Image (cartoon, rainbow, N blue to C red; front, side):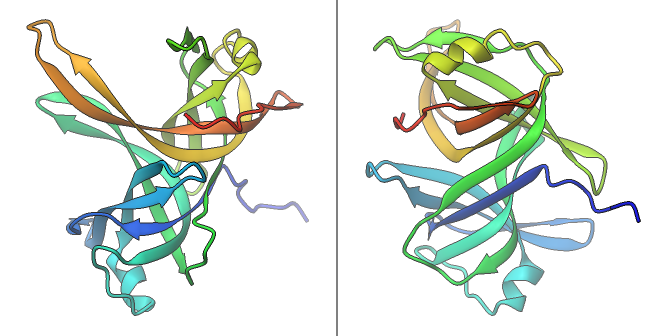
Amino acid sequence: MENTMPKITNSACLEGEIANEITQFENKGEVFYEFKLDVPRLSGTVDTIPVTISKNLVNSRSIALKEGTTLNLRGEFRSRNAQENGASHLHLFFFAKDILPPTKEKCNNVYLHGFLCKPPVFRETPFKRQICDILLAVNRPANHKSDYIPCIVWGRHANLAKSLPIGTRISVTGRMQSRKYTKQFENGEIENKVAYEVSINNMEIENMPYSADNQEEA
């Protein structure tokens, strides 16, 4: 019999502490909570990741959400279009699908399978570290939607990623991270912003596996 189970394209785990006040919204008759989760790296740097979780799921686990609560979540790293100051931008967030008992590991792992939907952008940091930015389109088999996930790959393999054509199918594993940066406008004003992305540890390109040797932390 043919296997009709949908292929896993997006799977993630995240464990950390609720970092801010919890808000809620309603979508198609269901109530969701939104907050940010602080997830420490081994280096001591903290990634602060936006989380969306169903009120029904929280109630089913009898969890009282509040600032400082430790959560161990399973779900997906998703995107949606959002409006800000009259402009559309990509909003990245972790969508929780299950809650597990907390551990001491503070996990932050993500697996994505998709295809490149924009040309890769190769650059160097002021410290001469080579980086390639890619945008991965990840299908949701259940509802025929797609998430658009910014990813970064480091080191010598950034040179490989920069030449990949649009449409290349790849699978990646890595971690979700937050990155602060400043944006300067034409009038000279400067705004502090935060980007969310996947820092790739391993990547498989067109059945060609390789390790990104991305153990350095940004």
